[in-house]
Length: 300
Image 1: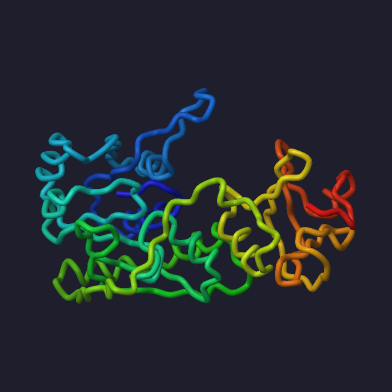
Image 2: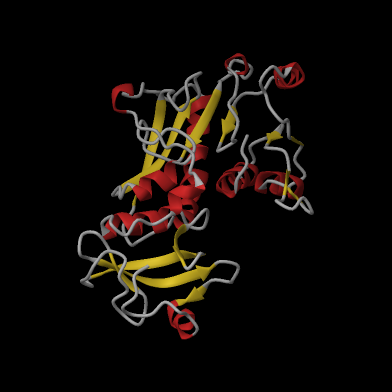
């Protein structure tokens, strides 16, 4: 059960390593904003490619048809990876070994919808994937294994997601074998130190230049590629796609170089290297500055 690109490598790994996949569950196709196009989930796409049976119920809540369908599968195990729906409690006993979830954080830190983004925005030094048993409460089940990666090198959410997906695709195989052989040890989380990664709201992307430079870099990286970190200048939105720390001095929001270096609240700066003006394609900073009104000495 999964939906976004993050889950695709894991499904492919199960398939390529010979695990019999009876069914794939994913979110229903979404209409694009103007309603012209129907967008299938990445998991539906790969299920079709691999000729796997897939189902796309709008919701599992009070859904007796899906309850009976899963019950009749008599499956060994359900594997959930960023499915995007709450699985009702009564479903959790429908497979012989329960439901496990691959969650993109070091639990109990960052339970919830946006763990990768929140971890980067929080300037965490590391993140990872946790393999846990699903219980009624969100991401609160006992954990059998956690795999960690470092968050250095200015990684953005897209890059971290790719790394974690690769780790999970490799490690899930050992976990499944242990679970099926009753060798897996699930350890209760320390609920008293749990933190929550709430869903990202678009307006969170607006940059406040009074914040310190590292926090602004965290926002730029954590919200890449969507919804993106942005500032408004003369009524237009500018999305910063990539930036590095600098040492420019001045007032918060002041542009202090010809290559869009902007001062932040801690009297450090960020040097923008890739940017996207509203309605335009992404540009590297050299190309962008050639035709831009945003020049050294301005405040944005």
